[in-house]
Amino acid sequence: MPLRIIVLAKQVPDTKNVTGEVMKPDGTVNRNALAAIFNPEDLNALEMGLELKERYGGEVIVITMGPPRAVEILKDSLCRGADRVILLSDRRFAASDTLATSYTIAQAIQTHLMPFDMVLCGRQAIDGDTAQVGPQVAEKLGIAQVTFADRVLAIEGECVRIRRDLGRAQEIVLARKPVLLTVPKSANSPRWPNARLLLKYRRARSAFEVEAEAKRQGRSVDDVVADLRKRGLFIETWGAEDINAELARVGISGSPTKVKKVENVVLAGRNLKLYSADDDGIRSLVTELVEERTFG
Amino acid sequence: MSQHGEVWVYAEVDDGAIAGVSLELLGKGRELAGILGVPLAAVILGSGTRPLAEQLIAYGADIVYSADDERLAQYTTLPFSRVLTDLIREKKPEIVLYGATPVGRDLAPRVASALKTGLTADCTDLQIGSYESAGRLYQKKLLQIRPAWGGNIIATIVSPDVLPEMATVREGVMHAPDPVEGRTGTIIDVPVVLDSECDFVRVIERHTQPRRVDLRSASIIVAGGYGMGSKENFQLVHELAAVLGGAVGASRAAVDAGFIHADHQVGQTGTTVRPKLYIACGISGAVQHRAGMEESAKIIAINTDPEAPIFQVAHYGIIGDVRDVIPRLIKAFKGKL
Ligand SMILES: Cc1cc2nc3c(=O)[nH]c(=O)nc-3n(C[C@H](O)[C@H](O)[C@H](O)COP(=O)(O)OP(=O)(O)OC[C@H]3O[C@@H](n4cnc5c(N)ncnc54)[C@H](O)[C@@H]3O)c2cc1C
Ligand SMILES: Cc1cc2nc3c(=O)[nH]c(=O)nc-3n(C[C@H](O)[C@H](O)[C@H](O)COP(=O)(O)OP(=O)(O)OC[C@H]3O[C@@H](n4cnc5c(N)ncnc54)[C@H](O)[C@@H]3O)c2cc1C
Image (cartoon, rainbow over all chains, first blue to last red; front, side, top):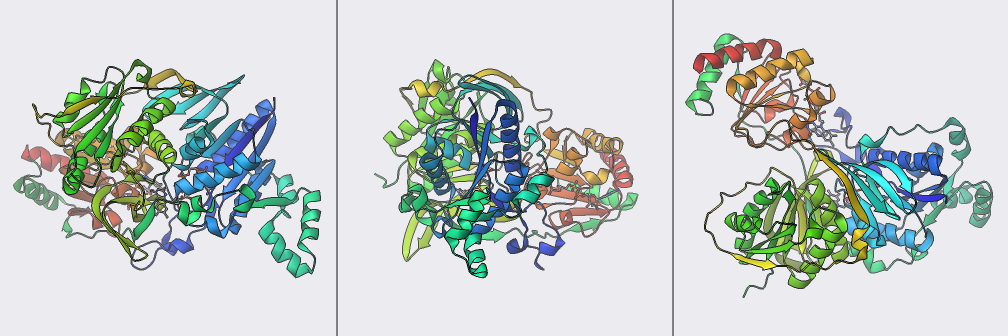
């Protein structure tokens, strides 16, 4: 039986490369200046999906929920070997917390992508940093979850044998399909986009891009879409109605958590006492530590 | 009677003992329950774990909900989330806190999703306070404070309209209270009702490695960074730690460079520590490192770069080369011993 594997991917600001240029004079990060990238561990999830497809046959479908420009990571996914990609994008999805995000994603899967064998997501996104979306999607779909899944050892009939890397512990578990896995970066090294696919998908477009393009070319949207579809270059774009979402459960109204305030981390700046690096300086430091009873 | 529900702490069992972070949460939970004027309860799920209930009471729980059943001998998501979700639905607590451990971060989101309630991840502080939105004032809400964006920002999150308010809390940031022997409380046995779905994941094998170092209980930590230059030079960090009777810590860059094992890493993705004395050798002081050590009582930084951010959290600084300064420090400390 060929597998249907769904990979969840998020476009994130590159919080790992906070260089001088994105620092503001007060030492805080200018969040708007960070580049938007493919969430690193979602590339590990995609790689795991592609390897499973190579081993067992089947298809890899990548879903992202985000603003229109999140389509960039979908095009990237196509160029790495994904078979089908879906953009969940609707103004009303904005400001979702993890509960609303997982509802929206699960709703898209249940409306259009049943039945499936596995859902693979990254362990954690590097912006929200919660690692909650995976388990919550699994709960919404009513399926088992295996977090920190760094290897799929085998698919044995209706079960999947999985290794979990829990830092201080390793586990081998047997999970009933369908199952959701969260994938840590230790799982694999993601492949690079393929040159032939880069060429092919250069012209792939989401519904948002088609609208802009059709206007520019003076053609009808339907016309452009039909043309792209024929060549396998149309990126499916779904909003709330397309996935039969209850509006009370998406976006800000579906999000029980609210951000009350956000502070940039600023260096504390204490009364630093400097000592010289020679024996005298170091001896007086040690004497001070003994006197204030930090040491000795 | 209080208008609020109880404050709960999920007591995680790790190798037959209560996890350190759960004891830390009982300390915080006591404080929150005091402000709300409600009892503090612990929930413990496992097999043969009922004896641990007394211990939870000694650490501050007024009530312990104990589900002791052989089917819960090993943690797996579905049965644990099922029992906990049912219990929360029945007892309606105000707040439920979990350690942000691999278990807590597997269990809590599943439970939150089933209850359609909010969950704040990996908090480093919790307070009770008010929240105003659209002209409405919410009082005595749980303010959940957490780093996000790789540690570059600190957000305060509230879940104003739903109950329970739930959060996972980072290990090592709260203080475990001292146990009080003979403290009394109520232990309530919880029936365990599972269905066939709960058998969807089975653990076939499990291996654990003991931690190489116990950074959390060390009162002195000598930590080395990428500026140590090599594994050979890193030996100086071990030597200084040995002279001081302290433990060895490290930055992630030092771990990544192969100078030392990852168990020694201090910081956001390592261990959070607050020793009496922290000596940072050749560590620049990135936010993610500081997040794990800036609460130390005294911090000494040794670095060749006077602009290194570590000096902004340090109490004492030496601008110099670690290869030169550490041997001198060893000599000076030996002279005082
Ligand atoms: C400062 C700040 C703090 C926040 N704190 C919280 C909080 O404590 N609790 C809370 O509920 N929400 C919180 N949020 C909201 C949260 O960041 C968003 O809901 C976000 O869309 C998903 O959470 P995450 O980034 O933590 O993803 P994670 O849960 O860390 O993501 C895990 C995996 O799920 C998949 N995934 C996640 N998002 C998407 C997506 N949009 N599309 C496709 N796949 C996806 C990916 O595979 C990803 O690797 C916070 C937001 C901000 C800005
Ligand atoms: C999501 C995320 C999580 C992270 N988690 C952690 C974490 O938990 N812990 C952590 O530590 N990091 C973490 N990091 C990495 C962190 O951002 C830094 O990269 C890391 O802390 C840098 O380590 P360092 O200070 O040893 O190295 P560097 O930044 O390279 O600094 C080396 C320092 O040594 C000094 N130096 C060089 N030679 C000498 C000499 N001979 N004598 C004296 N000084 C010298 C230099 O001036 C410099 O200040 C994380 C990063 C991300 C993105």
